[in-house]
Each structure stands twice: as C-alpha cells, then as structure tokens.
Length: 179
Figure 1 (tube, rainbow, N blue to C red):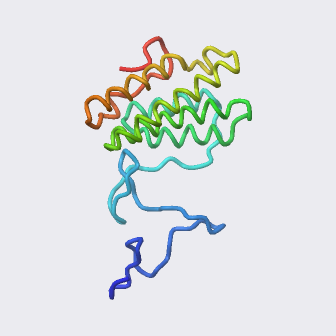
Figure 2: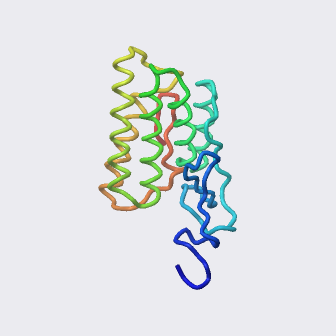
C-alpha cells in the first residue's frame, strides 16, 4: 500500500466491493467484453444478477447481447437460467454459458482458453440434448450452435488472432448457427 492510502484494488480507504452478506462483488465499470475499467470510467451497463426469466426471454436477451458483441453479458443471462431454471435444464444453460465465455475469451485474445471453453460448452450442450431427447430445446439449434463453436475454436487456434465478438456471434435459433 502506498502513502496515498490506495489498496491493491486501486480504491482508497481499503474497502472492497462486498454485498450485504459479505461476498465479493466487483463494482468496477466494465467494457463490452466484461473487462474491468478504472473506477469512474464510463462502462457498459452490467446485466443484473439473479434475474428469473422464461426460457424464451433468456434466448431472446442472450441473442441480443451476442449480436451486440457482448458475449460476457450473454453469459450472465445464461448463468441466471442455469441457476434459476429447472434442474433438468441446468446442463443446457451451463453449456450455453460456457460457449458465451469461450467467445468472450476468443475476443479478448485468450485464444487457448477461448477454444477450450467453446469446445467444452459445445460438448455439454450436445450431451444434454442427447440425454433429454430434445432436438431443439426452447427453439435453440444446439447441433448448429455446437458446430459453430467448434469451427470458431479451430479458427482462433489456426489464425492466432482475436475475433470480433459481434461478427462471430452464433445464431441460437435457425439453420445457420454461426455467421
């Protein structure tokens, strides 16, 4: 700690961002890919946590965020569905959240981690679909989304360059999952 009173969090006074139950909450503003910005900077509004949505609302909101190049925020929408939805659907939403995080990492330049998460999410969503017998859960074309994820994983490994998250966002519904 320097003589200015700054802590390792970069804020003064030693206080850390905590919720009412003492759990860590990072209130720093974030950019469109979820990267923290300096305190006081203008950031992208964060998704509220713990929102219970109908599956239709989850898919529509996540697709909107993906189309806007905000896969980190789409991940938070999928995570809400994973945590609040019925037990039998949790692995589907978890897999989709992993896909969104994989795209986030691929756009941020963490290509190895991005490719790994894209493949892991594709496998989880496909495994859930196979086990549930639902070909298009909530209208989501899991097979095409998984193919998109694997193709993107191969692309980032082959090119060694970050991707534009909005340009490479998947289509959750419809015959062509990727763009």
